[in-house]
Image 1 (cartoon, rainbow, N blue to C red):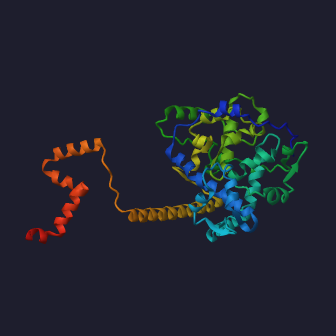
Image 2 (cartoon, one colour; image 1 turned 90 degrees about the vertical axis):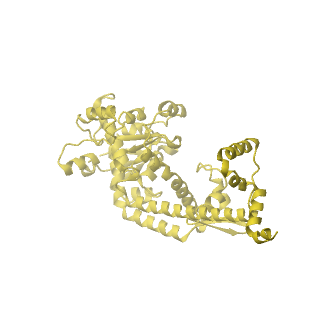
Length: 414
């Protein structure tokens, strides 16, 4: 049964984001930081892949890709970037203009990704239903949801593939006159889906629902805060938040549970804090979400890598590796391996070219400065009997040495 539509939240201003998110992050965890760094190049190349696939005949002019560089947060020439990944992108000329298309190996991975998406249709249906069931009015704004759809594993055409196809579970409503007021609404509440990951785990172990602390035992204060928090009864993110007081412990417990459940639904067990903040009213989250997350360091890790505040679910990782990998993640990791293979090949070619250039130029004689000469003299004085060997680094002395070495017979005759 659908809940009456609540007023939509306005997006936070830039001043709000600066005031509430700047200078806040967890103590650095090298393993989790490396997992965030590793995804950076893959994200950019995945966006370039999507740009190429949207073009006619799945081929794009390089100058068109260049025009998209600012939106990809890249600098420099697109041609140079594409050449770094020869296993992913194929460059060719047509009408005296550079064009780019995907390689056969890249296209094979695109087909594999589509097959996985088709096989996971029911998984995505349940995932969308769970998200709507956690919202206060069983509705989510389409524009806002699009910001998280990639993190959750939804395809670009999810409105047709999921929402329109399963009309018995979802429907689209647009009660406002504004362009961005379109929402997805849950038509039917399904109790078997309103069970969190924490509750499922507790049911399997036949214990009470509780969280897991994933920080070293030396973090005494974090452990004390975690034990105090964990002693309180678990509050499901699927219960109506309006029954709790805004500053109550139960409300905090529900908010932590909701972020935990939402991160568990994502592919990489992480999400942008700013994007989560856009759903503050729908999910009844606190205004200063980062403060809540930093209060529970045993459960969440907050990073400001690339000045992009991200929250990571600690229990989802073993070091820098995901513990449970979605089928879509496995395919995306194959993209990363192919990309890395191409980058290695590009670096190997560059290294070979640089060596060839050095060979053509010949040996380069470096002229010593006054300081270097003084150090050379001091070294010679300290070495004493080894002074003659050090003189061999002098070009003139080296010539004389080789002349004696190879023309020794003539020298002896003389």
